[in-house]
Structures are given as structure tokens and as C-alpha cells.
Amino acid sequence: MEAVKRLTAEKPVVIFGTSTCCMCHTIKTLICSFGANPMVYELDKVANGQQLERALVVALGQRPSFPAVFIDQELVGGANEVMSLHVKGFLVPLLKKAKAIWI
Image 1 (cartoon, rainbow, N blue to C red):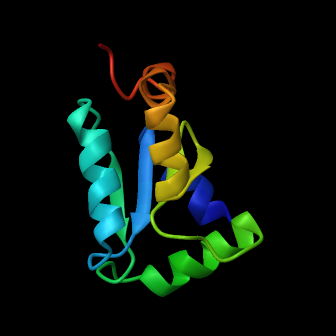
Image 2: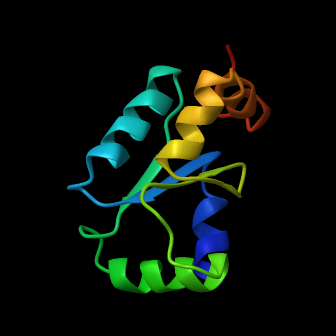
Image 3: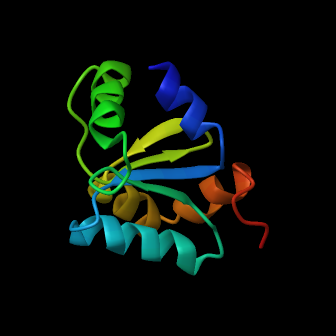
């Protein structure tokens, strides 16, 4: 759990996913399109990926869906939640509030 807190504190937007997940790529691309620079952890590529996945399970109390998107150290959710925020016009204000983007 401490590992998740530490990692999500590194940047305003942190995405946990896998390199082969098309929705992980889509959500990263969407967030980057607004000018944000998220920290992305591809759990199948990082050395401690399995440990991070276990830490996410402990921190969230359940197995996360990927991508698992944190904004301002809060779990926003997966692709469905992020896309819903975007469609409703709430994603950009959330990114601004977290100081992930300025415009």
C-alpha cells in the first residue's frame, strides 16, 4: 500500500497498466492529448510489476481493472470511468485541479 501511495505522489497523473492493453494506450493518449505528462507503469515491463499489482490489490481492496488511473493521488478508475469523465466534461477540470495541465 505504501508503494502505491509513494508512486501516485510522484506526478499528478499516474497510470498503471500493461504494454499490451489497447485501452491503457487509449487512455494514456487521451490524457496526453490535453498536455498532461502522466507517469505510466506498465506492470508487464517493470521489474517489480507483480509486486506493484499485489500492492494495488491491497490498496484498493480488489483486483484493479487496467488501466488504473490516479489523478491527484486518488483512484479515478479504469477506462470506462475516465471516458465517462471526459464525455461529461469533467476530465479537463480534474486535470487542471491536479495541476497536470494549465490551459
